[in-house]
Length: 131
Image (cartoon, rainbow, N blue to C red; front, side):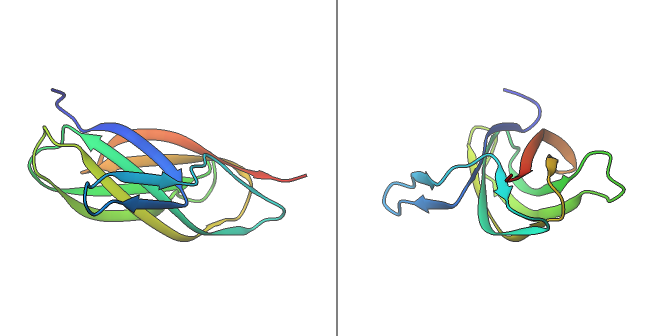
């Protein structure tokens, strides 16, 4: 077992259906980038599905930030929430509903995912202009 939280999945999609009988998650409309005719652009709604393991028992803080590398602007915190873990042997699935996320410019945006102020994933999210 690891001593720090492990990211098992980070998936951007349109919707997540959780079956009430089985608890299974069905992810709909998975995507890994956005394209727009003009900027600024506001994406109406997306879900960031995260799955973790190796989280200690108790409450934890999830923070997700997004920004353009080497920009004068600080990254924006788009998710800042608490969640509970029943212990390190459990997988935790979090559905994060993001509304009206605005992008002023195209670029390869940096994504930082933190749990309890510890970076657990650094990735990118490309936003491109349609020619």
